[in-house]
Amino acid sequence: MSGDPCDRCEELLQDFLDRTLTDQEWKEAEGHLAGCDYCARRYRFEEKLRRYVKTSAVERMPPGLMAKLDELRGLDATA
Amino acid sequence: MSEPEPETEARRIAAEARDRARFEEEALALADQVYRVARRLVGSREEAEDLVQETYARAFRSWRSFTPGTNMRAWLLRILTNLNVDRGRRIQRTPQTQSLEETDYYLANKMASAAGEEVLETDEVVERLSQDSVVNALSEIPPQFRDVVVLVDIGDFTYADAAQILDIPIGTVMSRLHRGRRALKQHLAEEALP
Image 1 (cartoon, one colour):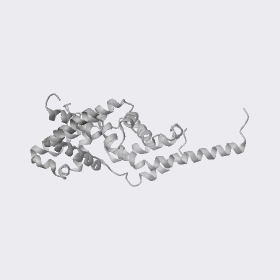
Image 2 (image 1 turned 90 degrees about the vertical axis):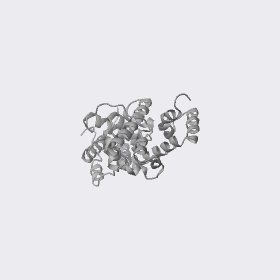
Image 3 (image 1 turned 180 degrees about the vertical axis):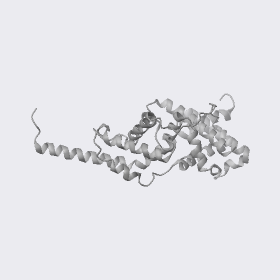
Image 4 (image 1 turned 135 degrees about the vertical axis):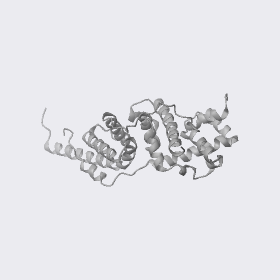
């Protein structure tokens, strides 16, 4: 691994969590994380952040919209 | 060409009505999931409601063009994102000085330098960012990056689905997703940690 190993680990973060790394890259990241608290903490933070972003961003459908959509049933293709 | 037997024709019409009703039921069952994505692609609840209604109106009119057995949620979102682009109803923000988004550890580093490295170990670290700041930061991401982040990270679409919905190559989905997430973290750092 060339350059700063923590910089390299940072580059692999998203693909690691998305599980899209090659086997070689996966081993590289895991090997580094096993011995680097600095990066391991940031990986765990990223996982928590992703879950939090998702729960924060979800807004349920407003009441009444379903009835409006239901009224659209049977629309004519020529209309 | 001879006229079809009235009985055969009646059976055909009845079968088509059943297929159509089944299609509509299946599409309506996805409305909440469609709305969740729509809501983060546009700036207000009203716009999201309009967009979802237009999407369903178009979907119900063109139900014959849906191939049964394929991913209906992705098909509906394809209609929705096309309508959204056509109408230019993306969240309009004053364009920022196009700063390059920061690297992936940026937000964690900012939080650590504000509250100490140990803060990252706590389970509640992310709750230091308010839910409003997350929503605001999402809306600040440039649209082409936001679309991908919303589809993949909020809508749970695969890269392949997102590529199909937005009509872009998978490689572009991945690069926009990476940049979009970094931009999100940069905006979050700006929103929550001035």
